[in-house]
Amino acid sequence: MRLSWTLHRDGRTVADDEIVRPEERLAWPLTIGLGAQHVVAMFGATFLVPLLTGFPPTTTLFFSGVGTLLFLLVTANRLPSYLGSSFAFIAPIQAATATGTLGNALFGVLAVGLTLALVGVVVLVTGTRWIEALMPPVVTGAIVALIGLNLSGAATANVQLAPWTATITLATVVVVAVGLRGLAARLSVLLGVAVGYVVAALAGAVDLGPVRDAAWVGLPDFFAPEPSWSVLPAFLPVVLVLVAENVGHVRTVAHLTGDESLNRLTGRALLADGIATTLAGSAGGSGTTTYGENIGVMAATRVYSTAAYWVAGVVALVLSLSPKFGALVNTIPAGVLGGVTVALYGLIGVIGVKIWIDNRVDFSRPVNQLTAAVALVIGIGNLTLGGEDVLVTGIALGTVAALVVYHGATALERLRA
Image (cartoon, rainbow, N blue to C red):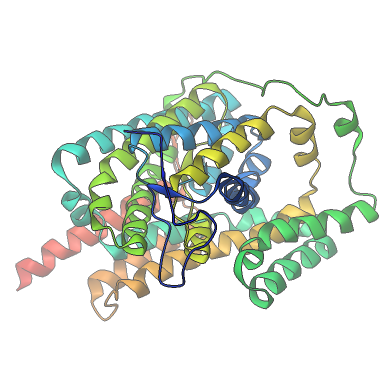
């Protein structure tokens, strides 16, 4: 692996029929600007996870930056990607902290990271065919959809705390996403939060006291995980989502760059995300995943240079070393979060539906119908089973149901034939 890049043409222009490949870069001033743009693109979603889970924002951002740099190293500096906070962790973290401690939740994140890293090693040895067999599009789409829709109650609960602020925030997200183009449209969440924050501040719902008291520079707050085996049933299904997201990311970048050889990096990508999530869980950060927001930035700019992601990782690390910044993030009121998450959680559900559409899942087949139907009802209804020591929540049960119903029904279908 080499940490060097070939200058693309004169370093300043990209022809309409060209792209800047991962091993190329533009002039450093432009590359630094692109890196900062990637930070802005990921920021709206990444900082919401600690806000919704109670994790320290600067710690989460710190491990996001560390994870991104680690990802680039493990993938031999060939696969452009930003590792931001995964929304798949929100529900299990909230469940773990509701009955336990932040350390218990970190133990769940740590377990997911180790399992994902192990999956990465297996894929390096065996390839990805077994993943495709275990998780066909109907299963993957159902799991992704139920994770987003399972969180809908948390979103509406925050909306009820400040309906007008939430409505203005949500309206801003919709108007920006639909009415603007390019990067501005991709920043709809960030702009929605900004507008909602101003509205809440004018209404006297923002307390800036903690921001004034916080230091400008300081290390993030680190915490150790506390073993709790009872949280694992809620966390381990997240591994399937992270696998699907990473595999999809690699395939998308390979397609957009016209370099199918990048698909051979799938195992490395899974291993890198697994290690990054393990590090985060070991010291107070939320789990990570490859970010679609940043793929969108690359598609819009036609610049796939990994150099821009090195810049993004470093910028994230610098921001994470400001307690004042973390205190500011923590002042965002519930109404603003409610407005944003109504859109975000719903969009996660829609992404699951999009997986079905893009892969032309045949819903005239009872196998596919029942796989999606059973998993979605269990996940959205948040069916919870277990006793005092172990509780298995809707996301875990819905994930298991999707796998069992699909493979069980498929076997019956073959026997019938």
